Image (cartoon, rainbow, N blue to C red; front, side, top):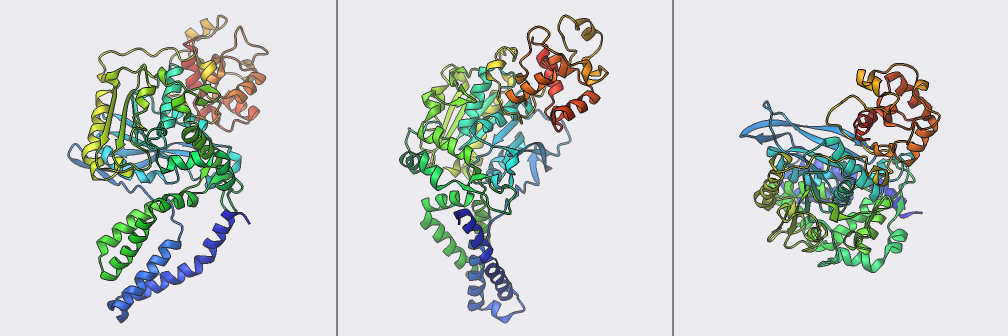
Length: 545
């Protein structure tokens, strides 16, 4: 029987014991029970709680950020999911401010390394008073049905690019730990395309840009085992009855075992102390233990293709610093980064990402001006102290915000107008067909080819009426446009559109509601045109050709 199935069987078999332990705990904690006031009763209750907590499966925690302070005023905070894909939700922390503020817009890319995005609760909380915060909320792979397709490192980068398109210009991106590599790669890809939505700044915190620098135990493990070992020993299929049944994943419980084995004595001591705090009636210390381990023990599965590609690309081949990393078959060239300011942050005592591994990003961005680069090393903090805790709040976060404010688009003394996106789109557009939409700066009348220019000047294409067949062509009118330049259209969709008779941006830009419905039905797009905002993108692209 596969190991994951045995894990599920063990969890189910322990359910009656957990229920019994919980019932016994409640019995011996009841103030009406005389034994609850004795040392014996407290020891029984404490032992039952420890047993129940060490055998349960911890669900996804909540951010729990209900309010913050803005300009000295306490305001409510509401979480809104503003962008959704099979493997990721984008959460916006909407502050209940009554006046318009010009706070910087920050996209926090949470790690996809076993824990949930709530691990960055402290990161969000510290930045929220002075910034408009968005964060990636990665979905547990065991909850994603197989029919929703794969998710690998290329898809991860496509998601980041799509999110930056969705959020629009003058966005600042912050990658914590694992996302540092795909964030840097995404910015390099966007710069290579001359994408107008490249972020104003990127902050990389404790990320493994070059793991050859000061390698840690995590780095050594990957190199010593090799990718075939990981394929054979840690990749498993999701068991029934999870929605992702039969999907290949790297299970979260294996990742957690690896985390805990690095400091096993510390975790054993923490649970022993927890038992003693419960017996002694030290509720504050016991509650701190619960809060930490409720978060730490809540883990998610990773898709197998993403995990294996990350291990091989980042930890074994060192592809990004070697200049061999590719995205959808094209080389990722960090020397193309010229418009996005770079801040790297490291912890002096980081035992997961060694000192200098994140700073290595500066050597890769060879064409980025020195006044757009900065590095900070926080003394006396480990890996988690880089983005959580008192030193993060008091010393690191203020530096991050100062860097972001310095490099806002409206603060730069000279700006370069956005260059045409379509010039290099044919060679560099992602193949991911589920990528998010480009958010255009404004809607304008569409310039069509020579046969329809007069009509385009007299009326917006978006109000054109008639059947779908009226706009379909048997062959391109001149040179066909590169439909892959529309975010959300990959090679397969482009071929399907061409076969249907759509070769030009103006054809998509002029679709009416009736024509959209007909095209949805014809090609089984299931709302993709409206969801990914193809029409708005096509309008913008048509002005560059």
